[in-house]
Image (cartoon, rainbow, N blue to C red; front, side, top):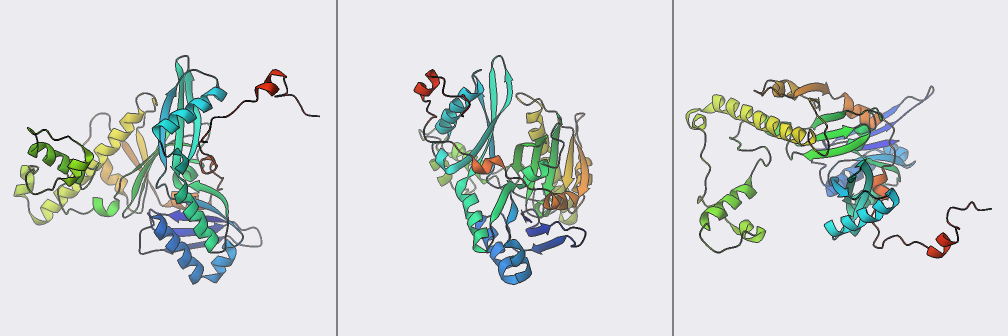
Length: 372
């Protein structure tokens, strides 16, 4: 039985495949609060257990869980051209030096590419307490986790594993959107926009950048630089955070904003958001067209309730334009009804100590010898 926490639509889906005698079982519940946080996910699971006893009894048999992509991170390390078994130790050392709290993460790595100059190691990681908190919540409703995967990986598992071409998919809900880039069944990147369809469709103000819709951090940095340009005060995160936005620094608005009013202004602001949103997506895809990826992306599938793809295709673009293909809601159901394998990320980590070699056994050739 599959249990999917759909944070795009704030739903929990339960699916069990039937047979010739028993029909498929399908259950879904919509929540009026966001499923972006662990606390709300635990709250939603408890609500299902209390509300429907028949669903709870089915869940008691154990579930294959697909969790949201929040907290899943990715990275790469350029490592020397050593043999694979040695590279695992080198990777562990590099990861521990980059993340001093390495013990708090699940980590999974693999060799993405190798040449005479070295090896490119790709890794994914997430916090252990986030996953353990969800597993504990599922145990709390009388169930158990048989396997565990995250949303983007569950979607990638439906693709051709031998494909050499990148695949980009834009998942959008009312208040949450993600751009997922995959190659075969491997997830290479997830970008969490921090907003969704609701924000894109509201003409409630002019937006300077879609990278940060509130751009408070950038405004504080600019205000700090303006106020302390000639002073000997360090540009530290602490000092910048203390800077108040008291009007000492203000961005100049385009002339159109000062002239337009009412509905005309709202339409202009919505189009501006779409242009900035498109530019952000183009920046992300351009990154994967260059080293070390060399994965040109020209088309993006769009999964959402509304045909936002049509609006994005109307945005004024350059010659190297992106195309958007609307897939509707079918992939949401496809993920919920697919086979859920246990992702190696959730059973991996970096050990505190390096692997030790028993040199006595190695020199006496006992390592590798078949046991009687």
